[in-house]
Length: 397
Image (tube, rainbow, N blue to C red):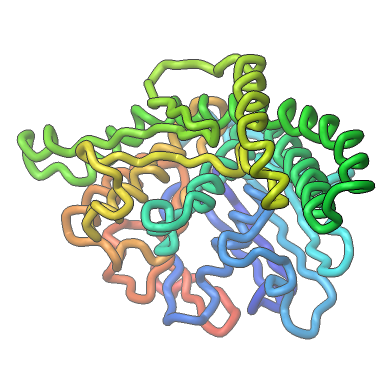
């Protein structure tokens, strides 16, 4: 897959912008705060249905505008040969309307839900914020898995949204009981809580099965990517080793193993149901659901030690980048290769990692790179100058 056109209207700093692209590497050059990241953010929003920088859509709409539009034309189903067929055209258009309902069109046809367009445009983004994948809270690593799965299996996003709805309702019931004490509140709880618990177990098991399966799929590519990024010699390569695991809120840990398939949801449902029974009294006392996918963790183990707290700064960069590189493989295994988005990454890497990443990028179908200084990007390809919400091809490049 590659993007051949990107259009923005009233998105972030852009009143209007149109960018023609081609396969291979394209580099967006400009000082900080000129709008480079906004272009990558727009592409990635089409892929995952949210911003990687903010939780709400309001900051994405240019000040003074009522709505923002992001439109992309992509080519899919290509042969991969330079002189081969250009593939099928795919147009995705998203209208962001803060305070209203966002709208989406596929090839000009309105879709009933925004999630119907998720995964049509595929992208993997690496940005300095990705250090949070290693150093951040478990929620950062859960989000990483969920965003990857939303592109890999479109039905996953619907299941996750349903889980969040059920979780909100169950938590509200527990809070209500905690605030009212026993008596009438106890009767209501006994009547309704089992229903919400069973709903949580049912959809939660679906999420667990998908997450565990994708962790298994990530294990081999992530370890290989990490070894490649840090290897300076065969001896050094043998020392670097990354292992992944999935830690359930029930207390069990699943060690990631390449080649393992999707676990049985029914068994996971039984495990989650039993886990909720164990914490039932604590939930009543605290007024919150204490077991489920919303409390799980992606374990990152580097050379036998937990990466969080033990990895050096360089190892943290390599590990986060390895997860993103592995994500490209995981998506490509089940469909189109994603567009690779690198937001001011090369300037943050040492010479070895910069060279290793550049070698990887040369093999991807399309890579969009931002940089403040052209010399920081060791890749050939057309350059575009970004300045105060405008983007133009660099003269002579």
